[in-house]
Amino acid sequence: MLYVSTRGGCGPVTASKAILEGIAPDGGLYTPSEIPKISDELLKKLCKADYCGRAAEILSLFLTDYTREELENSVKSAYADFDHPEKAPLVKLDEGKYVLELFHGPTCAFKDMALQLLPYLMTLAIRKNGGDDRICILVATSGDTGKAALEGFKDVEGTSIIVFYPRDGVSAVQRRQMTTQKGENVFVCAVKGNFDDAQTGVKTIFGDADFAAELAEKGVRLSSANSINWGRLVPQIVYYVSAYCDLVNSGAVEMGETVDVSVPTGNFGDILAAFYAMRMGVPIGRLICASNKNNVLTDFINTGVYDSNRPFFLTSSPSMDILISSNVERLLFELSGHDGEGTARYMKALKSEGKYTLAPELFASMKEIFAAGCADDDEVITEIRHNKLELGYLTDPHTAVASKVACELCGDPVCLIVSTASPYKFCGTVLKALTNEDQPDSVTLFEKLETLTDTAAPKPLKDVVNAKERFNGVTEKSELKSEVRRFIDSQTGGR
Ligand SMILES: *Cc1c(COP(=O)(O)O)cnc(C)c1O
Image (cartoon, rainbow, N blue to C red; front, top):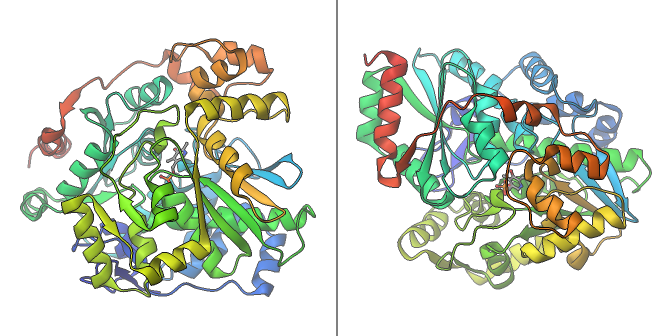
């Protein structure tokens, strides 16, 4: 299996090379040249396996230059510390509604599903592709990726990691998780701007050939842990396959019966993984794209016009406060039958005009697969309250967006609602929903929520409250490159 760029200018390359590079040299995203199929027999076999067994099987279909043994060992180590034996358990919320809990990793958000594994895949990729360059992972985060990537890569030999987060765009717990990060190879910095500013700044650095040459002199190569890296997406395909198996095993669906999937969406990585699972043959009916008040994707899926020229809102689901969703690029490439030139044209228009309109055939094929809706902060509060008081289930604000939109748009008898974060990451909003009182966004609310709901805050979140703050720097969005240079020099002794 080889990987090609969505803009048609690079590749094919091996899986390990695609993971090592993170983003293709032409600015496009590496995408598998074909989508492997899961036969009925294989799906039945996977139903009998545990999460790690399912993961090794699915990964081996995409990452063909890794050995089966390498994948099995990587998966086992990656998911060893999850606080639930099933890793990604399914919880029944209501008749025909199931929640897929993806927050049982060390940073309590779904990003762990991929970012606990990526460092293993990356270390193997370095070995497979020769060279002894230090890999410097450069991350822009809307809140959860940063911490998950830091935890995954901290003190991993041969790597360093730099995380930029929007100064006013993350929750108090999210910020604290990052600023207290331990490890000798890590650096965290706030940016005066929003997530799109941080992501654009990071993408510009990736595209800077002179800077790449300067770093090469120092024995350093940049790579990405954002969902532009294929190594981030492929582990996410696994949990859709796994969830389907669990639905079959529990008797919620008959083998072959379709289910709808509702995904709280920001950068479009999570829902794109569901799209790949569907294309592989997992019986998924509709993909429901759920957005918060930053509903650029709702409009895109419903009208075929992607228009990022609109106000940017800070919401109670900060990890979805995004107007430029990177992984839509892979969707366009797939829906157009791998038309690199066409995809490049759309992306060029997005960059210069902030906007593009899909060709009618492309819009039609997107409409066949996707439905889209959005929920604002008030609706999120109502949904969290409803889920807790009526159904006895505690939901974080991101999951509440997906749960609310699922109620409106689910067409199949069974709907899978993807739960992306622990409610304890967003105590302020969750407490407000349950008590009707405004709460300050602070890291000191855990106990209040514990007492009120008779649940326990995850230990890793409690630990950050008293941890020492290491990184309180703030930078201008024009200064990201100098921050990167300064940190890399400190890591390499300026050689
Ligand atoms: C990242 C994130 C999302 C959005 O996922 P995308 O892959 O960016 O669409 C939703 N919820 C939470 C809690 C997240 O951390």
